[in-house]
Length: 379
Image 1 (cartoon, rainbow, N blue to C red):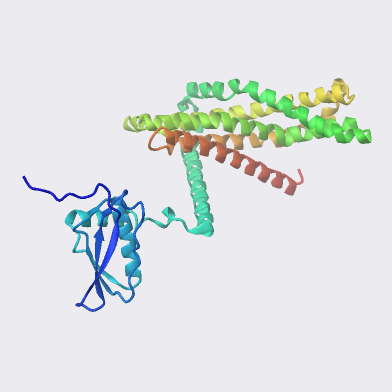
Image 2: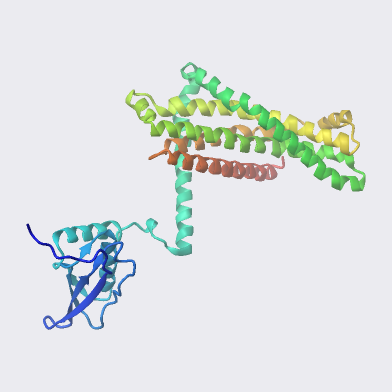
């Protein structure tokens, strides 16, 4: 039985510098105590003594774990940057292997994994946004490449799945969209009436509510609600299938996940969103009419009769033409984020959050782009 020297349960890590005669200006750096998470509760002074050009490490009398190896690796990098050479022959084989692993993994991280300051963070965020845009454009390209031939052969489309998605994204969303559109119409009428009533122009409530609802608010509000409700469900559904390897099973069977999962959702939303936007327009006008009749003395019959005089079919179509574009963006973003899920179930939640934020952001950007375009075309 071999006797082992007794050591304290926890000994603070320290460094001892021992001068050598040959070669000149060389020192032995002797690691003492426990170079571990416990021993490094108070970090030792690792500053390099003046005029030291050569360092020989000696860790034969210490224990070294990942925390100690990380501190030693950072100290060695600082010493070498100061012009000193470091000889690690005094470490055991196990200690050298651990030190090499830490230097490879912790000190050789890509720039994206290290903090680069404010400008670096801005640059990283910009590159991330451009990468997301590139991925979305690639997804649009795949939609055109795979969806185009199907439009010429509609019997190959999975219509049963399309009808199911129409029911989930359209019929079940009518209640919430109708209620919120009605309330937004009431709010607009109240805000407009409060100002117009001071000039005796209560009848102009019809103008304001009709134009804003049909051109902007109806389609935009519908798209935002659908992005939060339906786009997130697409991401969660496909992301869960990624985690459970159902998407991989489709590929193993020779079936395209894009054809099976993405195209039916895109087709269903392109059909559903314009209809929901039209319904939101009607409910918004009704909400404004209720407030105009009850609060500002504009009879509902007069309110309804004036709407065709204020807005025409062109105004309605300028709003509805944006709905299919919104639908494609929402469906593609939701499906793309779902297909990119990897790892654990927590990744599904993160992807769902990213999906909703991106979809709503893109919907607002596209709506603003349409407004600029309409202004340039004098529509």
